[in-house]
Every structure is written in structure tokens, then in C-alpha cells.
Image (cartoon, rainbow, N blue to C red; front, side):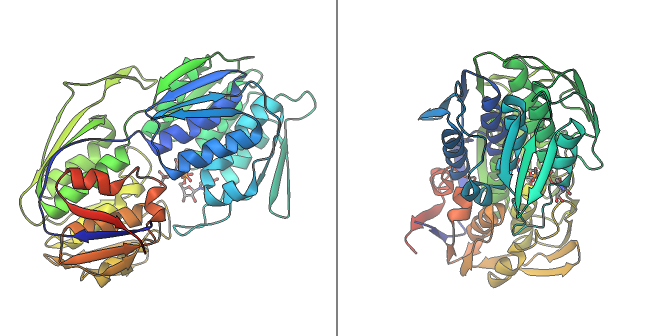
Length: 435
Ligand code: UD1
């Protein structure tokens, strides 16, 4: 089923646990390829993208088993080094398997992922990093063939990123773990998912310093060991549900996510009139690579229409582009004039048009969206164009009078385990329907 029906204007109330992080789990699953043995990941979200990554690993020769939220990956024997095209096209992030295959097998083959609805998304920085480590790369008819040079092993080197790309940093990390000598990555992305990946790799026996900073140093090792690791709660899912409370009003506690990973979005909820309290009381220790921090509880309450905000997206610790559309949704239902500048992905205002069908007043001026808070929205028939944009429509629908039907919700299932389950547990009237 890929449509969702929502009856809006019901305040949210209650407590829910947040699923594991998609963007942390995917590179860890790819990294399992580096080890000739067993890797166990727990708290892996049950979403389409992690299912897709399991299928790719199986196609390459791994055996993968999922039990609830635990995934067991045995990469003892890799039979192929070609990432199947259909998966790269449906999940761009599978491109990072190239670095893992080069590290483990000395060669890898992948099709060019191409653009997507939120922007062109080039991979020049990924390829630059691999070439810098000695990979020979041939691109022909949209296929990228990479090989690690004469002795089949990449060489440690200094890689300088002109932009802190999340994917390119992951690509370089995966390639460097088994490379010969020391690799230094300058201008690395500092997203919490990168710190988690470093913690996970170190737990496997890699030697990485500097997690959470823009300079990473990796001492290459010959082999890794069997390991188990728990994926942290998803900060973007938590931020989306926070936006839902700002849209619909109410009082909600989100459990299982690290509040410090959401510092700026939480500060903006407060600035917009919400009340936010965080605690780490029931916290579980997380190896973040920069020491251990606790997962905690975030309580968000809101009484009336949200107040206006001015925000700019950017690499961490700036505001996450993945929360831009959910924020646009609650600001459209709020009051006053808000401004959002999108500085990460050029095509990420696609949801504005759908929000306008619900009565939102949004003017796009290049990279900036000016949102004139309408005070309230009205239910309508809309379509999800991308993952976060689709979730944003659900946020807007919670603030809308009457019924909203959101079509093409398969996009939402790529990143949210069950948005209807979670929001109905908080009292929303939201359900999956056939289209
Ligand atoms: C990851 C996240 C995505 C998030 C994004 C930014 C995953 C699976 N996805 O995507 O949810 O929105 O980080 O936080 O973790 N760029 C280049 N050349 C490159 C690579 C990137 O120019 O080789 C540009 C992109 O076009 C974009 C910017 O860098 O404008 C950021 O992209 P990047 O950080 O690489 O995002 P992803 O890793 O694709």
C-alpha cells in the first residue's frame, strides 16, 4: 500500500521509541564487506533501504540474516565484485560499496548512480578519493570499473575534500581501513553518522583517529575481526516527529536518540514557541568514536501555531538538509514570515508545490523559500516526491483541517519503518490505504 490518509488537527500525546538510523546503518552494512567473517548489527531499521543493502550484499556472495532489528552479515566469501545495477539506481548510497570492494577484493564495479529529485548529486569527490589512493578508474557507458593497481592493495595518502561530503567521506574511510599505510582525510564530514561509522570500524579492528572532527587519520590494517555494534537512534526521524508536534500541537517524548545530535533543530523548536526538555536518564551508552555519550529522551510540547524562523541548511553541525521539508511544513501552518535557505541540495524545494495545495503560501527565490505562515492548512490530495518531502506532507496533514490523502508513499517507506504506526501511537488519525 502506498497511500496514507490523515485527519488533522488532533494534538499529539505520548511517548515513542525512535528507530535506528538509516544513514548510520547503511555504511556499516557496506563496511561488513571488509571483514572475512561475521558482523552483527543491532537496532537496524526495518526499511526498504536496509532491505536493499541486504540484497546487494547477498548478490555479492555474503549471507545475511535479519532477526527483528538485528542483522547478521557473514562476508566470509565474496563471489562477485559487481554491484547489481538495479540496486544502485534505486539506492544511490550503494556507491560506497566501491570503496569496500576495492579494500577487500582489490577491485569493484558499479554503475553511475545519476541524479535524483533533490539534485544532480555528482560523485566526483568519491572518485577523487579512490584515485588518490591508487585506484585506477575507468568510466564507460555509465559503468565505473575500479581496480587497486598492481598488488591489489590501495595505498594510504592524504585526501583533501573541497566540500565535506558525507558519502565521499564514508567512501574514503571504507577504502582506507585495509589500505597500506596511513591515510589522512582533511575536510571530512562531521555528521554523527560518520562518528558512528568510525566507532563501528574501530570496534571491528580498524585504527581511526579524529572521529567527529574534520581531520581523520586511518592506519591501514591487514584484517578485521568479528564484531557486534548497536546503531544509534535516527536523528532525522526524531526531528520529523518533533516537527509533527510543532504542527499539530501536543506533548510528546521521543526515546532512544542522542539529544546532542539534534542540538540545532531542538533549539529552533524552542525559538518557534515549542518547549523542549532533554534528559539522558534511561540512556544506553553509545560508542560514538569520540568517547561515549548516552542516548536519551527528548520531550517536545507545543500549544499554538508555531512562530517564524530563519534557517540555512548546511553540513553538520549546521541545520540538516533532511529536516528542511518537515520544518517548512510546520512553518507553513504557523504564523509570521519564515525564510529557509537550502545550501546542500539544489532541487530540494519540490514539496513546496504540494504544500501549496494544502493552503500554504510559499514563494521560491532561487535557493531561498519564503514561507508566509497561513495559520492553518486544509486537507487535500497530494503526492510524495521524495523521502523527506513525503514525511513533510504527513507533518503538514496533521495541522490541516479535514482529510489529506498522500499518494506515492513508497518514498516514505525508504526511510521510516512505519510513520503511521508511530504517529498513531501518539494519537494521530493516520493510516495506510490502498491507492
Ligand atoms: C547523505 C545522506 C543524506 C543527506 C546528505 C547531506 C546517506 C545515505 N544520505 O547523502 O540523507 O541529505 O548526506 O547531509 O547518508 N557532492 C559533490 N560531489 C560528490 C559528493 C557530493 O558535489 O562527490 C555534493 C552533493 O551534490 C551535495 C553535497 O555535496 O550538493 C552534499 O552531498 P553529500 O554530503 O555527499 O550527501 P550524500 O552522502 O549523498
